[in-house]
Image (cartoon, rainbow, N blue to C red; front, side, top):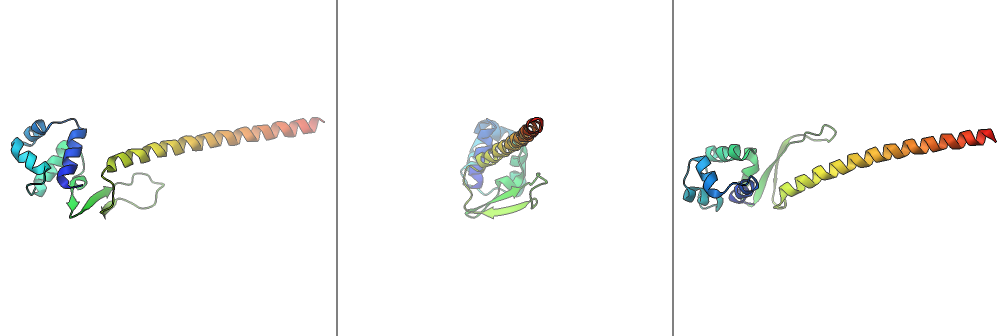
Length: 137
């Protein structure tokens, strides 16, 4: 994804039109359109302003040639590794959908762990019952 495509993605995700977003940035619609269509170079200050208006990290907008730059924010203390930048040219365009999918899978894993614990307790109870019944014979 190019920087302009990323900006468009995040803008539409927030439900903002180009006109409204250009106004938020204090620039003309034509100037903003050139940003989204990659017809102009955008300085870092403007990118920072765009990121702030979109409530995202500046790094999420940056591109490096054919490659995208991503910032990985590891908030799960159980995972190894930490926060950092990743430059990659094979990440899918729907990066945000993958992030949501990972969150859903983490919820599923937690549910399965809880179910497993409940089943293990049930097996223990059944084993105790069998043991008691054998003792009465």
